[in-house]
Every structure is written in C-alpha cells, then in structure tokens.
Length: 55
Image (tube, rainbow, N blue to C red):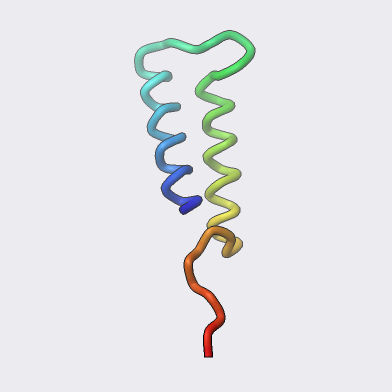
C-alpha cells in the first residue's frame, strides 16, 4: 500500500519537474520526493503490508 503511494508521489513529482510547475511554499517536486521517500521507508519497514499473523 505504501509503495503504491510512494510511486504515485514520485510520478507527480517527476511530472511537476518536467513541466516546471510548483505551488509556492506548498507543493514542490522536492516535497513530493521527500514524501515518497517517507512512504517507501514505511513500506520497507513492513508497515502497510497485508500479511497478518495467522495460525
């Protein structure tokens, strides 16, 4: 789940970087990249996975 969110954020950041747009002081490609890295780190840590502990 978090990996999908990270991929979407990276895609939006890339799109904003390509077209050269940003929303001042709120959404820039750099903030989206950092948010994507945060979600990627959460996914790597095991959060947001669907595996549960079943017997």
